[in-house]
Length: 297
Image (cartoon, rainbow, N blue to C red; front, top):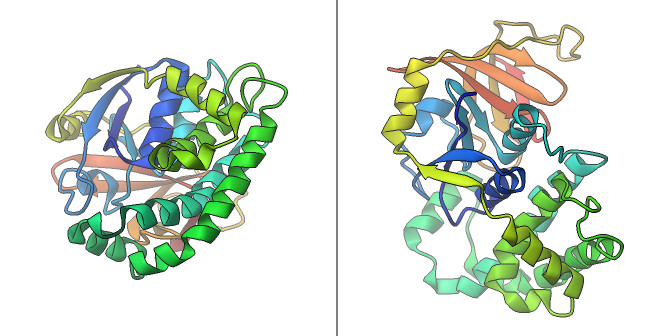
C-alpha cells in the first residue's frame, strides 16, 4: 500500500488531530515538515495554491483539510473503525466553535511575544486583522466558552473511558485537538474536569504511530513518479457539474485562496480536482464538501 505522507509542523493543532488518528490506528507514516508561514514553495505545487496545514499525500493524490485527511485515513485503514454515529458533526464543532475559543485564549496569553511575521501571515490567511488587543478583551468570554465545551466532553466521559465508549471514536480524535492545544498551553482551563484530564492522559498514550521523516523534495519526487487514483462524479449531484468541468474550490471560513482545476470526482462529502502541476505531472487534489465552496469557472 502507498505510504501516508503528512505535510505538517509540530505545533499545528489541526496536524495534531491527524497525528492522533494515526496513533490510535497504530499506522506508519512519513513526516514532511513544512514552514509555519508562507512562502511554502514545496507545498503549493502539490495543492495548487492551498496553503493551510496539514496536507496528506498518497502518491499523486493530495488531501487538503484535516476533515478530508481523517476521512481518507479511515477509508484506507478501516480497522479499528473510528467514524460512527454523529462523529463527523462533532469534528466540525471542534474545528469551528471550540477552535475559535482556543485562538482567543492562547493568543491573549502569548500577547506581544507573537512574531510580527506570523501576525502578517495570519492576516493574509484570514483576510482580517490579527488583533492581539481584541483577543485579550475577548479572553474572558472565550475562556468561559472553552470551559463549557470541555464540560460537555467531561460529562460525556461519565460512563466510559472514551467518548466513543470502550474504545476511541473520531469524536475522541476531534476533541483531542482543542484539549491538546489550549489545555496544554493554559493548564488551569482543565481545573476540576477530572474525567477529561484522565481521558487526555489516555489519548496522549496512543502517541502518533510510527513516524519517519522525509524531506519536501522527496515528497515531490513521490508525486512525480505516481499516478492519481481513479475518481468519479456522482451523476445525481444537485450541483449539475460533470466530470471535466473547469471549477474552483475555496474554503468558506479563512484561507479562501481559490484552487482551480478540472472536476475529477464529486461525492456528498468529497471534491476532487485534476490538475497538471509544473514538473510533477497530473495530480488529484481532494477537498471536503462541508466547509468548502465549489463553483464552475
